[in-house]
Length: 223
Image (cartoon, rainbow, N blue to C red; front, side):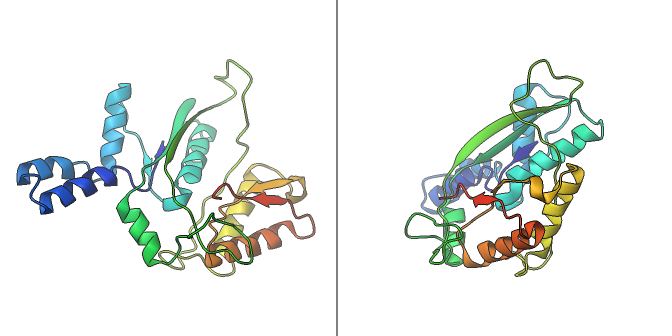
C-alpha cells in the first residue's frame, strides 16, 4: 500500500513551468506530464519490485499514511494477504505550499499544535516504510502491534472537519472497538494536530468526548 498526497506533482509542476517559459518542447512536456496521475506510482512500484498485482495508492491528504496502515491491517485481518509493505512518501511541491497559503494555514513560525495562540502548520517532506505481518508469518519478535483501526469521512467540507469532531470521534471509536480496547487503557495519543484553529478544535472536542475523565497525554509531531 502506498500513501501520498503530492505523488509526482513536483516533477510535472517543474515541467509545466519550463514549458511555459519556452525551455521544453511540447513533446518533452508531454513526457513530464505523464507522471501526473497518482496511479503512475502504483505502476512504478509494481515494476520495480517485480510484483504481479498492482499497488493500491491512498491519497487522502494528511491522513493518507494512517489510512493506508488501516487498509493494510484490514487486508491482513481478512486473510487477503499474509504480509505487506506500507509506504508513505511526500515531496514538497509549490502547489501544496500555495494551497495551504491560500487557506491562510501556513505558520510563519514553528507550529504549536493545540496552543491557544496557534498560527498554522509547517510543511515538510519525508518517506517511511513499514512491513505488516500476521502471526502466521512472523519469524521474529515484532517491533509493534497494530491492534485495530478506524476510517471515517464526515463529508462536511472539502478542506475542513466537522466543527464538533463527530467524524473523528467515530474513527477513534472504531479503532478502540476493533482493538478490543477500553478508552481508559490509552495513555498517549499521537494526534493529527495541524496547528490550525479548525482542525485542533474539532480533534480536541472528539478526544474530550471519547476519553472523558481519563484524558491521555496528547502530542503532535507536526511541530
